[in-house]
Image (cartoon, rainbow, N blue to C red; front, side, top):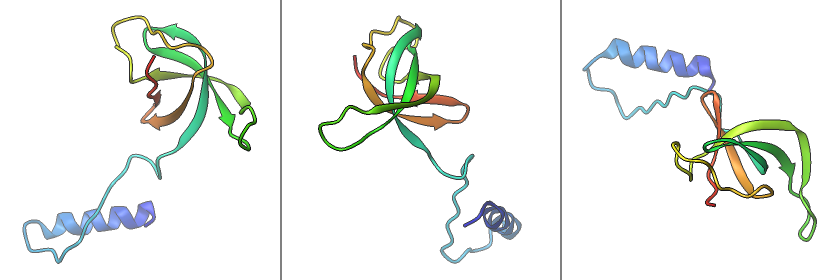
Length: 107
């Protein structure tokens, strides 16, 4: 469904109020779709925030290639109130949640 179709469905459901709706489901998302990238940790910024760079995973036995510039991301596996302990060179999958890049990698 396009976002316009999503809005029309939600408006129609709202107009119907408590009247019976025949098995219709609608899901609204703040973005068109979830996006995720493979990343390599470059350095600690502060607390659980790290500089990371996107990587392209190649054939088995080859080192992933760094692409683009560094960006910051929050490691959800670590405390938000203590210094991070993740080693540079760690690989993870990063996703965008709202305006924040996040990943989960245990130290």
